Length: 455
Image 1: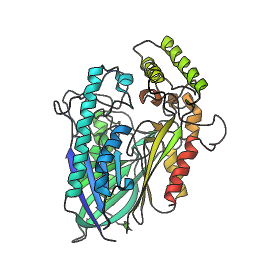
Image 2: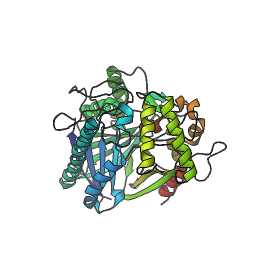
Image 3: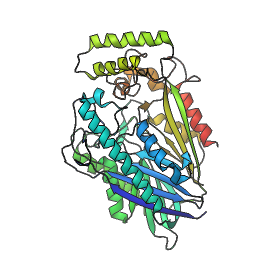
Image 4: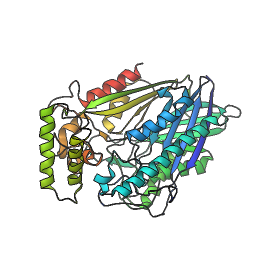
């Protein structure tokens, strides 16, 4: 099956006044804003793959997260360019914690940093600029002339991190898809993926694409082609210490050199096409059924009690304020939406899961799926963590309950856990004892992914 491809890279590194806000995303606590200092530029990159039946579009961005309403705004605008087929458009973020905060809902800039209404309005202004830039990038890339290419896939290994949630899995797989020009077999583009939190720089006020940007630079400089990084199931994968600017270069060089070595050696597998795409959304229940009036009253009382427990300058106090406001406004959410997407390229399956997915899902799906399977996460939208059943059951006994979303009470968001910063009222659904039961988070996610892979 003949392929053709177009690729475009945009340096979108925010600067004032084009971007009304330079508040940064990715770490909680004290307000954190950029003041014009940039280390490694932030990229948005778009690749169009056409198998003769129309464009399939991958958009990847150096940003920590994209909330649901931002994802939907971008998707709605570009869908006509891909035949109004949801499966044909996919966004992946690198999850660098050294980029701008995009969106004002989940995570909540008020809960995370106690920002004023004026500052939150500025973030919304930056979000509008961001949305328009991403839409324009897709439009421009789709309109470009496409180069006939052949596609090839290969996997390698390197280690730049560890499992911070005390789980047994350390993901070391490098997935790589290269395009070669049909005319002369010269290298055209490199797409590569790895699973590790993009936090190797640490918490400062400098814009930086972190180790994915450093690795991309190593590959592009060595091979002379555009290179795109895609994040994996990194929810519990932490880069090696110490977190520092020097570690960005060190880990990025390790990963980048591994990819260069892969490209320069043999063993590549032909990706034959055609491309079949699929898109689905599942709704994961929360641990508390907030559609039950009695449960909602209990939750409201609990969050009122939290206002008496924490000082007003604590993010758990601000989270309780936000939850109580929802009781008297739109009501608390009842489900956690999760888009899932598959690209079957003929010889290669790409499975993309939204949110901060933990490594257990990647390992389970890889083990049960024959053939080449590239797991991507942080896909389309990122509004929280999707942990496996054992982490959800463990609560604060693993990594202080951060990935589980609860600490001493599984009916509430845990102070200092992801459900607080992403502004959710309770953890995701799990059964407190035994294996994952029907209707639990793990079963819903694995069953949905397995069903999609079997289409």
